[in-house]
Length: 106
Image (cartoon, rainbow, N blue to C red):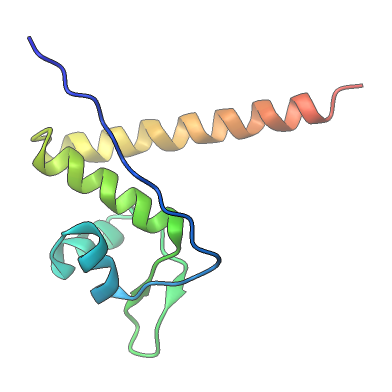
């Protein structure tokens, strides 16, 4: 059984926000699918524009790229993607807690 590695490239931009159309171009995802991921709370948004459409920061674009990779390349179902995101979020919270505890040792 061949395992493919998950490779996501992150390009750092300073505090720039991306609208739905820009997010679609950066991720290769259809805007409707992005909206579904946002509605399902699988992709973080940084706010909304005057029309109520989501705006994405760098972390949101990164998450959308991961979701698209899981969906297309790894062929995961939306249910499995949701489970994967839940585990990623738990891991990120645990890592943040560990960093906090290390920084606040006596």
